[in-house]
Length: 158
Image 1 (cartoon, rainbow, N blue to C red):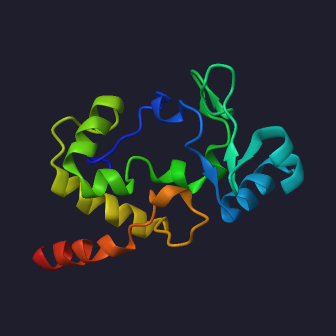
Image 2: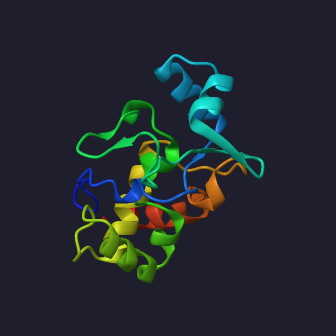
């Protein structure tokens, strides 16, 4: 699986306000890891926008849990959206989106063919139980169940 993506812990995917939605499952996992209640987690590290809980960003604009030179400080419990990067719906359905992700993320090999990325990405998401369908998950980034026939088709060809 390391061919399509090999995280370099650069933190580029941890930059920017607003992308990290915390699902109910994520919240339970993070609270257990940090030994805090949901109320305490939300007060210390979260913010509610719309109807969703998001991880706050620090003064540098990065996720509050990211430390330069160290990486994710909650790595074992990180939200599913973080676990799934770069296998987001946009990158799986659109080669141009993947090309932009390659420019942004040094962990995606520049010569990675889109078809191979899709095949490995869907297998990874499926294996890690990261394919979601509930509205509690972030903007559809992990809602890729309709793409699973592609994975099944690819397995038949092997």
